[in-house]
Amino acid sequence: MGGEDTPPLIEELALKQSGRLRQFLRKRVRNAADIPDIIQEVFLRLLRVPRHETIRQPEAYIFTIARHAAQQHMLRSARPDNFVDLDEALEDFLTGSEGDPVLEVGAEQCIAGLEESLQRMSPKMRATFLLYRRDGLSMEEISARLGISRPMAKKYLVKALARFREKLQEMDGGRGGG
Image 1 (spheres, rainbow, N blue to C red):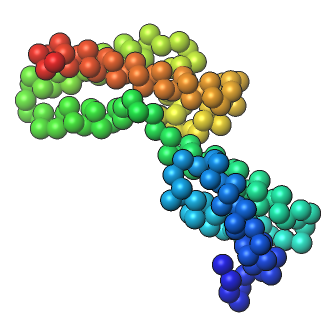
Image 2: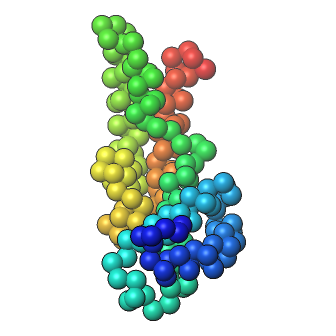
Image 3: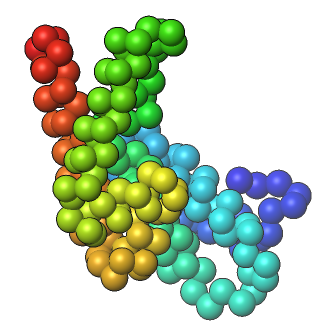
């Protein structure tokens, strides 16, 4: 940190708490290489606080920020192993299909199959997928909107993606590809 524009409180916290923050984050972040970036994010967020003198317990405050930053980092980096990006899958499927009626029919069948899978999902699983994929909401926003916990929203999303993956594999196998 350091510098003419950095408030003394933040410089002091950076000097005194960086080691403890590093230890704190080691327990919460899978990839240790991400820790310096998260620490930087913590202090950037602290710099955005309008009046630092209003922070009653600065040490506790930076650890609260660090916990939130680590959680957000984990959410961004937590892509299930069986994650299927439908846009990519369909793009791969449709590449080079312009003007080829056989591929166009195949694409229409693929979309119909995915639509069928979507309709067979439970209402909350379907809503979770649509709110996440179509509307771009975060897991927190989805859980608040649907009245479910964040882990449950994530579970619904993972299950929905797994169903789409199964359907795509089933359809790929039906074309003689598997």
